[in-house]
Length: 608
Image 1 (cartoon, helix red, strand yellow):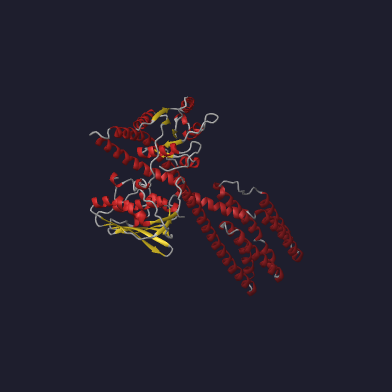
Image 2 (image 1 turned 135 degrees about the horizontal axis):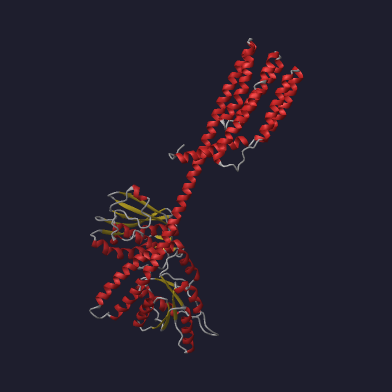
């Protein structure tokens, strides 16, 4: 047995023995009935030929033994495995009893020197031994108990006669007995080994299933923990960002404004780290969907070069982003994020030399390669680099080297877009990441817009003029700090902001504003409200017109939620959403766009 645990070996041995017992008892009833009929027929034939009264006594004894075997309590599948040894011994004793009674009959037939009867007897014994070898070999004790007495009775009775013919028949019987027992032992060994292998495989499969279940539970717990921790961190950070943005706006032209700017840079850096974790949840939830289109790689490479050139120069590295004139079929924003993460990773792990980004056409595909001269990746680490939070050569978790999620996002985007990512690396020599994309034909008369390296949004130079900010905004949030921070920020931008803590107050405020003829231009609502109230449902109810002819109020959802299930629900609702901590510029832009839309039209989902 493979296990080194004695208790496990004992349990496995009991299961194997139980299968052996079940195999033997499977034909118990029919075998006994068949044997009884055969005994009657065989006994009648030999008695009619030899007229020996002893045969009748033998026949009665054998039938009595068969009746006892038939009616005695027997094993059933309901018997526990620990009783298997008892039932194995019991059936071995019973078949041995039948065999010992049968062993008497050769001494009653052979001495008559009746060759036809002797031949019939040998045929019966050989047939019985063959049947035993097939039905009793799962239990060696039963096989030996049934075969040996019967066969030895025949062999000794033949040898006792002493003449050449009988001695020859005895020798042939002995040879047959040895071959039969050898075959039975071999079959028993094969069956035992196959059962052991089967049960060990079942045990391995069970342990594997437990490990898979444990891994899945750990992954779910990790997701829940990240979601809860991220949400709890986002709430105060969101308030800090709003207070800081308001402060920065008020101190813009004063010397103290520099400290406000530094504060907001730190807040934005922390928000970017949380957004990175949010991206993983959004990708897992299916919230982010790809919109493939022809993309000019040179138009995508240009903002990437602008984004990372200063960082490369600071590290005294060479950054080469080579134009190619090639077009691919992909989602420009998501492809930008993939390449940005790969370039960020390359610069992070390169101390000297440089990073090269280039594209090459290969048949119907285009290879976009990000090559660095960094520390490289050892073969044993290659399988882990796409795991969340795994970083090479960063045991101290240096914050300046990020969270270790960039390549995990690359892998998720690769699956979403259908762009395989290949990696080749030599420790100490550098690493090559290759993204395989489908080639596309060049579009006449236009380029894809350039994207911001920080947000992936269209650059300001290519945006349309920003719409005006809404005049009046109603905020529904259960946290006092958020209400104060948001109203402070909005009022610093000349927006009349009114904040409430629950749905009832929000409904009253909306009705009052409509009666006064000064309705709110926008309703802003948090996803998680007090007492488990769903902010999405509450916001949808409030945004509907309160009476005949009353227009709907545009709804903007603001949340720190990262749960994949909830993110998917938000996406399906088609309500625009911003994720905490909200950057002031993104908040103001979203508010302006919503307020500029027709009141009756509810906007589609947008990513912030």
